[in-house]
Length: 359
Image 1 (cartoon, rainbow, N blue to C red):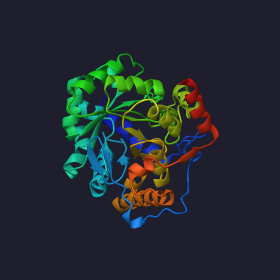
Image 2 (tube, one colour):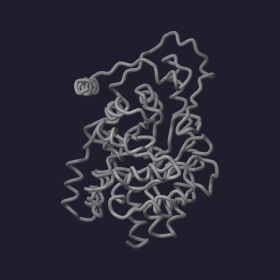
Image 3 (spheres, one colour):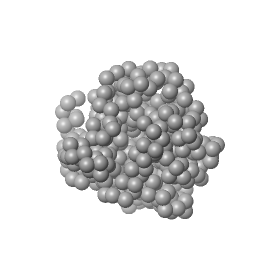
């Protein structure tokens, strides 16, 4: 695949996510079915509320990650530069998009490494795809991805649905778990495994725990549909089969809140909530359910495309809403928020009951 082909595909992802409506259509995150209990006597000074938290032995200013997004084009390089500045300013981790393009072509490696060149001290998360593990990616390739950005951790993203719909997708997932186990044991940085919008089930979470991963990012249904994104790309390429597949499976997967319950109740690992996280209230609800961190991608992308100040203002608002929610439930630390009482309703209550019946 040529440099132009790779960069064009990466730009497709940026343009479609930023300009088209590719959110879930009929399924939500289910976070609206999480009801935090209002505390009329919080006995707190709002200004003393502390949102600091630890993740993978590092302390951050809030439980928020700039999710894995982009790289592989000049547009992506500019976005990663702005995102890295925000990660430094607010002391939050940042994930990069899949680095396969940087491995294939050295010119494109700079579209990822710009994040480290811009900010020396931030916690950067490298990224490779599960389908590439099955195909040709080696331990040395993973090490090169880490070296490319001097990463503090490595994400392996699982995206069988996206690959299935993607016109250029890889459909072979044989041997992926063995590679995850090998990488978890031999790499110098912790391995995180994430979905890309279809969620992680308890069965998969248990297998990942046994394979030695250090964290799981559920990335459930409710946010950007990558089946939808790839379906739109297929429509643009006049590939009717892939377009119809993307449309049919647009909302396929496990809602984010349900996936959190699936994972948190079955493995003892730090869990990242992502997939449709859009504001500080979503973050607070995720933490109350048991998540350790939350990640967003498309909201950060859209604000980064506007301006650095737009991005900074958005992150400031997330933190303010998170603190406001903590004030209203009487929790002055993230640890206390993780132990605050909540009530589940609707389909999320039913999902939890079905999980309990299985155990």
